Length: 110
Length: 112
View: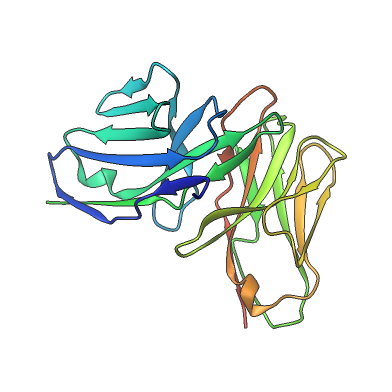
């Protein structure tokens, strides 16, 4: 099992739709998790942190399921501007070496 | 606030040429990282520096060297470029006690 796995997609959804991505991780000792957003040919930027209680920021909700070792990202009322690649990041250990998933591509169309 | 600055933004090299990618951050961060990103491969760690004066290998260090010149600057050197090193290179930094990385805009390198 790879350390961090994501469905590459693309997820192709209409404006206004609700879409969800999952990310599975193999290191059961991981304590914190992150979603980054990467626009085409740009640098990754932090979208949300994911802690035990989950996290909600406007239309975006991130959840953690420790038992099944996955995190999820839910986007409600999708906008055209949400089109991007969403990267799941799982840091490891005290030296903080983050492992990036390969990303899930989202395309929101009119 | 500039954040993380990478130079150059674009570069074309011939096989066997050498070059240094520069990275500087103005956030007083202790840790700095170099990644490469290839289509379908995601971000892969080349080298990192947990603090000034230390460097460690990441997942794909072969063909690269790094220098942590001071707290602000972390450079990546290709001694003899190969076509397999054609990629987008990102530098990132992280503050002590933080879990968030901040990325530069990237360097797009083509090796012919």
